[in-house]
Structure formats: C-alpha cells, structure tokens
Length: 297
Image 1: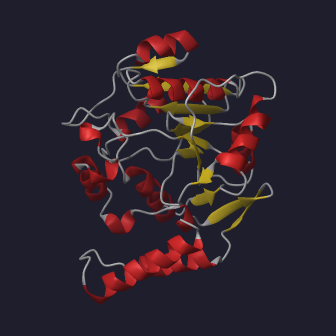
Image 2: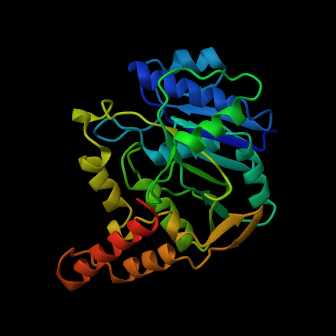
C-alpha cells in the first residue's frame, strides 16, 4: 500500500505552455517511487489523454460550482475515496517535487499524529520539457538556487496531511484565492500541528500567465475568490505560512521561531478589522508593509 497519495486538479492541456509545465510536474511526481500514488481529478480538455499516457489514475466526475469550476470539497472527497494511503497531499499541478518530499512527510508523521504540512514555494521560469535522467534533481536544485525566487508566505501550493482530517471542507472553487489560506486557519483552529516546512523542503512552481482564467485576470480579482473568502469566514481567516504553529528544522518538528516577521504577522492579525477602514485598518496596512519588507517581498 502506498504511504502517500498525491492528488490534484490540472488545468486544461489546450495551452502549449500549461501543457509543458503540467507534464513536467507529473513526471517529477512519478519519480518519487512506489510509496507514492498519484490521482488526477477533473475532465478538463486533454486531461484524460495525458493521464492515460503517463498511467495516472483519473477521476473525472468532480462536482462544480455555477461557474463550472471544480470544488475543493469534491476533489478532496474523491481523493479520499479512491486511495488507501495513510497520508494525502494536494499539490498544484504546476509544481515540481523533489525526492525529499516523501522523506519530509515521513519525518513529520513519525513525530505528530494530526498535522498539516505547508511551505513557501520557489518560482522559476521554465519554458520547455525537463529531462528526467540520472541526477535531474540535483541539477534542478542548482538552477532554482541561482535563478529561482522564493515566493511570498501568503500562497500555499501543497498540503500534506493524514487522511483522517479535512473531511468537511467548504465548497471552495479550486484555482481561486482563499481556500489555501483557509486550510492553515482551519488546521490551527482544530489545534492540529500546522508545520511550515519552508526551511527544509524545496518545491518549485513553474511560472505561467493567467490566460486560462476568465478574461485572463489574476485569480485575486475574480468573483469566485470573493466567494471563497466568504465561505472561509472572511478575510480574517485568510492565514499564511507565517501563521504556522510549528516548523520543520533539521528533521525535527519544533515550535515556530519568534522571528520578527512572525511577530509582526501576529500583530497584523490582532489589529485587523473586517470593516477595512479607520485606525485599525490603517495600522493593519502599516504592519502588512513592514511584514513584506521583513520577508523581502
């Protein structure tokens, strides 16, 4: 039985660049060995054919919202129903994974019973198919260190967790902002160990445009993002990796360090006002600017 099931909901394969980076991503996942199973959810154009090409399990019957966007709740339910592994991992379909992804999951699972592993990604421009030959992971890591850029802590592109948790997720729209931030909030609310693995785990996001979204807009500007925020209880529940209660450092799950950026983020949460006006909102914006300066974003 696999130790970990990675699941995702890919974008359509109609755009040449999106097709390239999603093919790169799935090939990197398939390099992780027999302890990993992979599921693709959805019926977007080209998905069934590419899944068959790589021998990936394909689950087309996903529930969608009024805009035709797959629902996160349905994606997670399908992954749980069609897997038997003790751990699950949702990973965005443009993310390249290195072999230590599984090692990190094992390390945390050996120390904590209920947990959510998240972390910052590295952004990298990739325009062509990658050669997954001997030594590919070392070569790619070197390219990321020299050419990549560490993403802001506000976005999360992967979630590793035991299959027993996250069984009741709101009907968020996938690929729109907000639901990933709610995952961190919910983990903390349930008093699970939310583990920031940014210092220990390199995950690589292949940069792309947003031509696949309505009007080519960034997902932050879409109505579905506003709906996601409302389903998650409001903007005050949009947490980030800086809010994690633990970190993975040198293979050990430890209480998150009291770094300046984490302390500023805590103050930002304390003073935030849903009304988004007045003195508290002004202070929130000042703290947000300071936090971004501290993390170099």
